[in-house]
Length: 139
Ligand SMILES: [Zn+2]
Ligand SMILES: [Zn+2]
Image 1 (cartoon, rainbow, N blue to C red):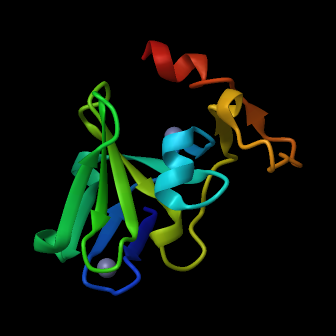
Image 2 (cartoon, rainbow, N blue to C red; image 1 turned 180 degrees about the vertical axis):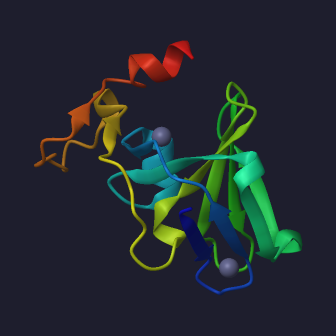
Image 3 (cartoon, helix red, strand yellow; image 1 turned 90 degrees about the horizontal axis):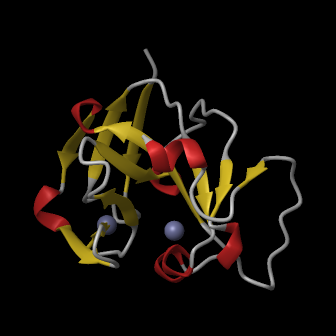
């Protein structure tokens, strides 16, 4: 079983994931770009039941960036921990950048490429979707 550990930059918030990761995405939407301060946000889909905080639950804050999307971050250091999508109530979308080591991940999808930053060019062969992958939308 794949076990992943992660923590925020100031290490107050830490967590573990005990699950094989099946879905990995680089999201180019403007909200992910702003909240991560970068060209895109990178996330893995995790079953809520397979995610456990080890410390720092009192140190997290959330921000609703849209009606369905809530972003969770460390209130001390600002690290993006995950986002929640109300359309997927049994899942967490954990920021890959806060995971330690070399997690084993599937090939990523580029999503919301339709709102990609003009100053960033995608130079890989990964699948690209204008918004969500269609399989993801219909689930
Ligand atoms: Zn922190
Ligand atoms: Zn996004």
